[in-house]
Image (cartoon, rainbow, N blue to C red; front, side, top):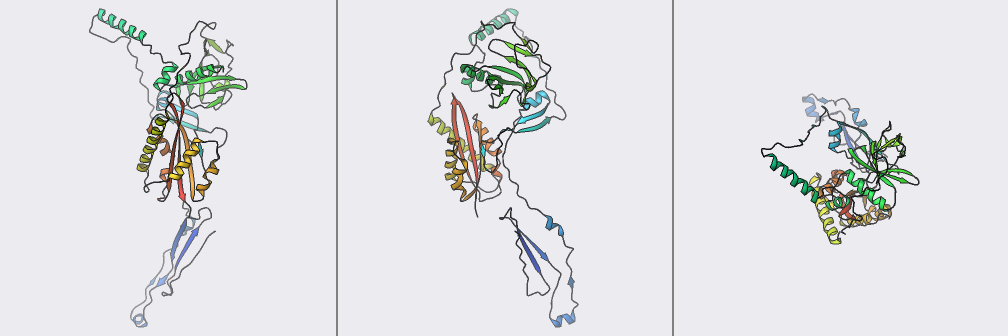
Length: 426
């Protein structure tokens, strides 16, 4: 609907000022006002008109561009993201392929499809960077005599034998850090304890690069490949699987090299008994091979007081960095909405729209919730700022924040963060 109103100045007979206000159906709160000045002449008394020649002022040519001007307001909304390590691009020289998009836990105003979404990327350096090839020397030059050097080498070997540096699952969990292969080994051991047949798959994938490690799971309904770092599951026939090439498959008793002409999992035959497709390391499975993993891993439960303290520190740091990043006024934090968001994060099975119905009576609500593995507070802050809600230009907007920490096992925590933008209804 378009509303028009004209205003005339009756004191100046040939001076007309016309103003026109437009409001569109899509944006009823946005009003555009334009003014148009018509041709006019200054009126004087009859005595002065007889003494002076009247001056006529003509208007400029009409500017018809205003009728085609569209005023827009850009809003930033996070619908997904991808992450590519710099080491992958640096080592490979170029990344060209499909990446699976990570989605928010839930997002109001958008409907997410059940099937996964992918993004085609091409990342390269110009000019191309050549990674340095450094070959460490087998023996460092020294001015000491051979007897002292031999004694030092023997002492180093003895210390290495006492303190085993192999990174097994229990040590990986105790340290709280590990690469893709260690994540995959941990998942393999856990699935084997549940009597689920699986094996370790090594190859090249995006965005992990040449250090990619997946878990091959054989279930009654099919064969699946699991990314142990993000939990994504792909059927072995999925052409969009980011595992570009398979090089080695490791079972509890043997290791097999891929000698097929194809590399992608969707084009491979996973019958490890076929010698024309897979080259085994040992001619037969060796039963005498013993595992280095512990029979069981003891987990330490995180106390509830520690979770509450950590949650409070995360929320406090996020609000502080959010205030610093916002350019349009000081953020107003709605405590009632924050409590509601925390209840939603703690109970994901309830209806989101039903819980927000009361809040939507007074506000236009935009909520984004994400789930990330907790590593440090800085990653939580970066995840919230990536949502872009702090860039809204309205100075009267209110915000709400909630953080929920979920212990998984040991000191591993899952972190769910919900951030909301509240705009008061007119």
